[in-house]
Length: 238
Image (cartoon, rainbow, N blue to C red; front, side, top):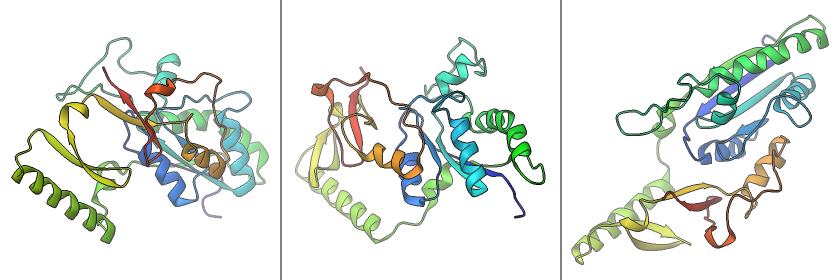
């Protein structure tokens, strides 16, 4: 009652992959919209996020959006909101500098929904936004017993591999089996959400009730699609 027509926007890490946003939206069970780099979205018209958020706020009095930092970059460029224009800027590590989607998303939704909500509510309240960017605090969550066990297994296997004479390898779990993987097979790969070959992203769409934004185009060849337990597909960056 003290925060009418509330919209909470939480931006999490995820430059090229939206796993943190996807798993957060599923785990919290209160998200109304999840935006990730792998799925393009739009504001206006049928199936746009503006109408979806408007309906949720009118019905429930509030809405929550979880957005990955790499989401909406193409849309920001199309709408002229990109800070660098056509020039691609990079940080000292060589990563492309992303435009800040969080404040931009809040502003775009406030522009579209403020008057609509004021006209639809009894006291003329517009859209009230709260924006949270936890950044690296996400990594500061204390580990649980499963985390500690997994880290111990990785550490032991790494030492066993080194003592056996292996080098240039990494330790990981593949299909629940602990494996040694050559580094050269890993460094040119990227794990992204697979929206076509498995159903984890479908759970997000069902849980949030959001538009699917899906098209008939399949961006991945079946022969290149290696689905993972986390709901992703391995893509080559070469």
